[in-house]
Length: 375
RNA sequence: GGGGAAGUCGCAUAGUGGCAAUUGCAACAGACUGUAAAUCUGUCCUCUUCGGAGUUCGGUGGUUCGAGUCCACCCUUCCCCA
Image 1 (spheres, rainbow, N blue to C red):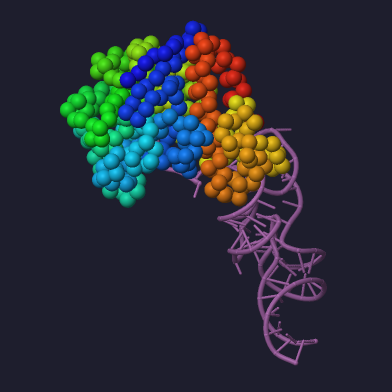
Image 2: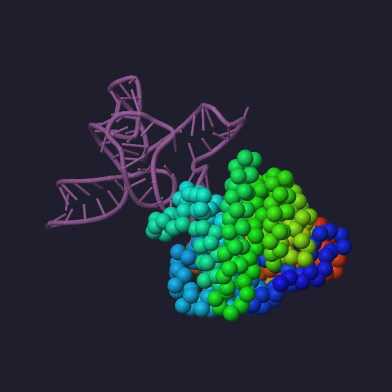
């Protein structure tokens, strides 16, 4: 259930609340990605106390392969299994239709994957993906879609969209004819596709709103298209999608992308960037990004991030963090991941405050130049 | 003192007549967007208008159209025997 609390006076930016069986999510929100049920390198304690995460992601394809549905079911659902015990969202495997391009085959019925772990073959259909997500037990589950690549010619995008819409209908049929397994409700979000083509996106938005879903997602962006295309498509979609439902922009993005998308009416984000780039020594800050492997930090004994909200930001110095990365210490990746996620959550928290104040766009203008530069 | 082995771009390695010269590490930089990523890419003798140009393989001579590679001597290091 979503409650729209405010819309910024100077743009489409929304602030709201999503109520789930595991608690309330204040939007706009960034959701750390925990593909296999774990946010890489980070424990629940840090997610709660350092990062202030409100909801995390899991992935249907990955959890289905490992540990498998039987284990998750025995555990009593994913939030019992991973000890997070707060809101979760599972992606459907639609992204793997894209990212596992070479080891999957799209069929009329669904999609056949070859496991990236052992090569075994598995077929995902919309029905099966609903059943799996019922078993995993996330509060928000996603429709099974094809995330189209970029570039993508019009004909492919159009055909793919038609298939995704057929799959969506089958998803809702199965979703509506089954019940949650663990005593709390699940919400199914449709995913808008249509590549960078405005007419396809409009068509898709008009189709998905017929399901009167609890929330909607925009997929198929941040796959290599120019940022301007992404912003243009978001605008087209959020003009059609209902304002009184949360809108989730899948897989986005950089801090700049997130602010631009919030301005255009997006409520929810997820992205591997803060964790993956963190593991690869890149830090995001209000002042810009830093490559912590760079020689220039070798004897910089200032705190990692003076403006950071996580305790690691002031506890450790840049020079020490660089040393840890150069020495390939695990701690480096943990510190960077905590820092980046805390920054992302701080970013959306600040955005929310300015939406509530009504000056989001003005505030965004004042920070966007800084956060994008390289230090 | 006698016998044997070896010296290659930071380190370690390849190379047995066509070589600016293999590979690994280190170093330096870049990428990463619903995670097949603690990963991947590039640079790594000097200069460059990025087309090339110039100097290189312990040293000095020599053989050869051509030498890191073959020959002679010298220097250095390691191993074995005294």
